[in-house]
Image (cartoon, rainbow, N blue to C red; front, side):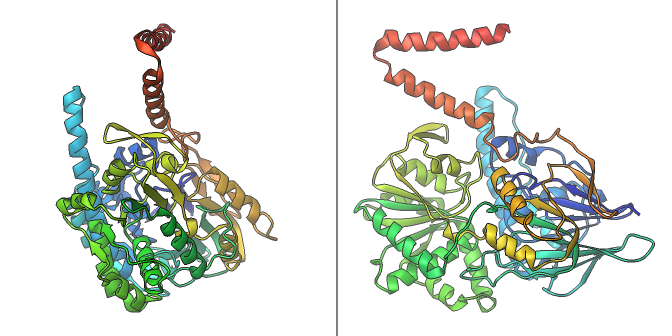
Length: 531
């Protein structure tokens, strides 16, 4: 009997994690994540699924991050009525993250439709609503780490702590599909945490497998010598350097776990006298709700008591309402704002960036991965001007990056984690990465003895797994061509061109010079139209 694996996301990209493992009779999905990054990638979220949602028998989630779970409500809305298996921590976080995602989509679509109506364009609908997300939560079924769970006929799964996030898991899957009754054993890594994590244990997993799907986000990075103490020293230096009397330190941060880790480190530095007492604003309703869940699970976390103490500090203030968020802008002494989203694509961080980017008293500190095409990546790469909410903003603020808060293992850690899973007999797939990390990890794994060559699939590829090795049997390029995956797209180039035109026209001396630039652009467009 055939056993096939479909890659419907996180193939040459770091988002949209979605894999379908199927026999002739049963289909089990692992993750159903939202695409982030460039606009071309995000548009995939609005398209129909490349499969029949009602034909999926069960869904297994590795963790609650939106790039792994964010399309669950859409899947349910499209007809999926099966169980969703997740750890208790993942289910708790999904109960706040998915409704928050639906709410954000409703608000953003409402704003977009107002602009579309003014421009005479067609209106669009949200991918799903807050109500849709709440409805999908009834299908969650909690599973414990280390215990086998029958998820569908012929399929059973076991969850291992991935050390990435509260509730995160690598999912071991056994599929019995052949006449000999011998199961095929696969491991979906999910996101693998680093060796030194403040709140999570070291990642774990089984050995002796047929296939492994391994994330590759930081496959080309080596954070040798990283410790929590070293990270705090660098954070201390960054905060000191940012301390302008009337300035701000803006930290775009993922609301779940990254924010909580930052709080613990900042409060430890303040208590030790290495930083003065500084007001810290957590400007994210989702971060507030997530922090409450982390407090409930404090007994399951490393340094859980330190987290509870930091959350209750008088220097930490959580803002809930829009009015409270706007009031932060009226503060005239140095303060720290931690706000979502972590890639600056949505949420309150964009309002704070709009208010502060043009001021040299501000510092923006990136503490997480910035996908290609996101506002965060554009700023991180040194843009001198950006567009936010339709306005051109000059960038005078300092841009800094502290990459030691990543929830992902680096290249050597991924290789070590994989080595502990050996033997892996029939195939390795590298997913959840951009080109350079994928190729670097592929080369690194190639140094191991008796390991099949690592495969880098494209989006919507289909592999047959029933033989001695994986064989690609289908390739589709309609949804996202390989050249577009994990790269800047034409939307980014178009926005950059508009900024360059504005700069050139403004810099031109006199009305005649400005007119020459405009005429040349018009002539080029007319020549193009005649081609």
